[in-house]
Length: 463
Ligand SMILES: *Cc1c(COP(=O)(O)O)cnc(C)c1O
Image (cartoon, rainbow, N blue to C red; front, side, top):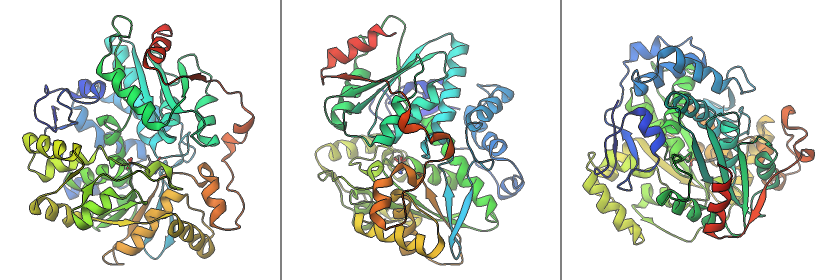
């Protein structure tokens, strides 16, 4: 399969090249030239498949023979063998025709494991074949870093460097990263904030001359196509469990970088009957303002109790815009440069076609805490703050209660104990068994000044 850039001017790549590429050279994001499409009969025939078998059906058309079928199935099987629950993505009912899809059964308790467990094994396979070694470099404000480290810790061909803002991530999040003591894992606590980390990573990707001969950087944030692709699977899996494709299903998705919900959009484009995709945001609500008022303008970032959605610019939104604008790269270039200077306005046609599938809702911290409390009181089920925003959005925005709504649970509540404790006197959510000793495990990280040559020198010396 061929992959093209949303801005129309970068080289066309094959699957493996797209996985290694990260951002396109024209500043755009890679997307498939055409999407695979499945008929209702074909989807219905997958009803009894395990998660891993279904993943193969969805993913193999994108890989398109570049990796042999047996090898691809083995990569998928390895990726999901680290999940605690046999169903991989189990569901819990929280109301009439309302379901929570638990995407936190992986090693780091957030949905990012779905993509990053898969990406780690996929990269290792591709790199072994090419006899190539790479360095993964990323910045994290919390969940991405630990999921990336867990995904790469056993990869022979990868050294991974994750920058986090020193003293500005939660203790659970920090320990999930720093207690992985593998020789190829390097945690850098940068004296600065998340933006400083992000800028350092961006600058390093732009000019990679600090790396030893023959090495390149690989991106593991959600601009990487393989991450998005892996996330399409659980939309199909949950819809099949609820009677799809004969019956439509709606989804409510807590959204930051627009990766997770964009995977739902792709599922619908590939033939899954989805009635609504509900964008759920916290007070950092640029996507909600865009869908509801055509106001896609940058505002000051505000810290919330759902920190994994504290994002101002949603990178993957560009991939949706590319489709909304008839896949016209020049139009996307124009729009994105308009947005660089503060804000962009969507055309009536683009907005109308977005609204045919998407709706949106915004909830601040107080509202979110009330939802955690009320769901706990009515069902005994504890939501994490991100998921709670999704549940609220589903209740507010669903068109009809005959269609099942699935709320994506993006994290386990024990990952965000502070918010859960604020919601009411329900006791502290317990870490799952395999992480019980997290707070007494040995940690390893280096503290570095916010200085580019210092950080790049540190990386160079370890490769
Ligand atoms: C990353 C993350 C999100 C946001 O996901 P996007 O794909 O960036 O929209 C939501 N909730 C949690 C817990 C996360 O870790």
